[in-house]
Picture 1 (cartoon, helix red, strand yellow):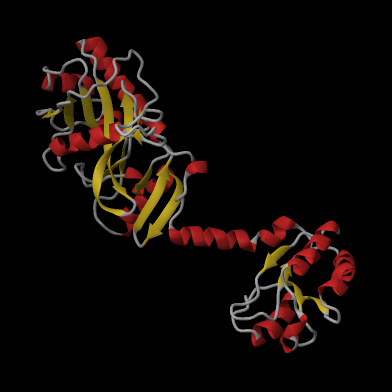
Picture 2: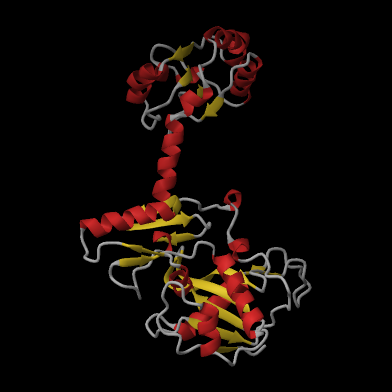
Length: 362
């Protein structure tokens, strides 16, 4: 394969209502069938009128206006650090500031992402094919950062005329190994290649990648939507601080979610059923959270501050008789007996460095 990356020069400033197909065809009459047209999303947004007015001067009013625009473009917040906000847009893209841009535009305006980049790519491809008789693939690109890596690169937001992903699964490598997971985001790679020519300050918003073996297809394909990972498969859907806060919120609501606690009489019946087998003479006390904090936490280093449930030990001072507590199968027998009484339990380990206590959280 031999690729060429060619700049499309002379497009100039794009304003609302401009005909992108005409601008590109005029600036690049040398376009050929099978070329891949990489178009910066900003000129698509400008042509489609995806601009909003904000105060031109930096200050609280401009910040407030920008925050309002960002909120409207945000489907959910992924992470926030200082003034930086990583969000998921309504398209499904995870980007800093929802892709809102203040560069290469008047000071009193902001540029939003195209409303539907795949639709924009399809419309541009159709216009070039129908009016200028050239059949190209179209990629609408924008700049993104990457988790765990410094630096920015261009990726595809919209695609028409070629698959977004080249799927190698089921193919065999030169060593005879069947490929199981390899799916290459070729449109992202081509978008990055186009950016090498376009640059950020050279006012070259369109590049052509020539020589890539795109499959000739009359349809536009599934578009860049195929690149958006399903939420069920997203292992990093939140930033660290946001995931921790979400977990704490869920824990705070857990008591309300699970409803009233177990029947004390059912707990007592289960304990009585196996008490003699576990450790004759051991006192099993169903304690409250306040009792745990005032006795257990004070006397056993490392015990969870919010521990609740059944404390197995010698009352009233559990740590005075550690020899009366047994673990393993006997403790699991107690849990089984509780389950038989319809009392759900979770086995918690004893505090770090202690063998004096065990907890069945109810």
